[in-house]
Image (cartoon, rainbow, N blue to C red; front, side):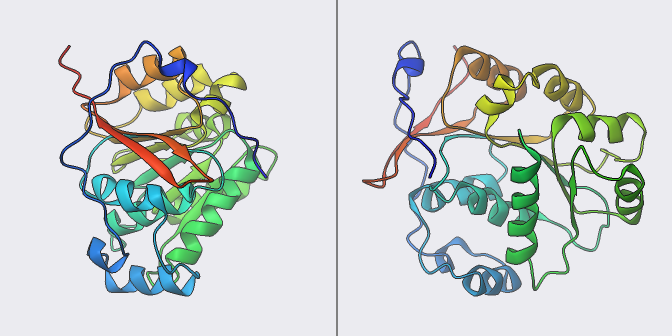
Length: 246
């Protein structure tokens, strides 16, 4: 089980306002998901959305940039996976969503969740990670993948080789962003971001919000909704819609 980490100290110098426009969705049915996706959600075993899912899925679907302070065990992976699947145009066999993670294991886990939830949608999702066969990556990406889940180094390598085409990408997900920075991936994340279309939506998931994370959000995001301080044991959550006009 993931160790809980203190979260208040990194937020001491940041001001937040309670959001008035983030609606709590008590059920998956109330989120107006595609029928095939809803079937996948229930087939996966979900019955009721978790606290973060109730608040974050719909803003992501609506195209908002989102910062979610979330740890393992909160349902974070399914949160952005459901939003991703709702947004996909499966008739367009090009990469539309890119998800970066700090480890190969997490990238593969995300791929499995997306494929499971999208089981009735004919979705293509590839895990693009180091330590695997380069030729297989090239073959899969040439075939066409709606979603690519990977580690920053291998993903950037595929972009540089022009195998991973970024022209149709509309969402970038940075999962466990603090861990990616801890592992020294900062420059590679910035390198990847430079290749994405200017209007790309950004979703950032992080257990802590140190200065480097806040710096990244200021460069990558526009008027993000912040979903903060998720307490696993009490299922409590604080929401902020922070306007960057200061």
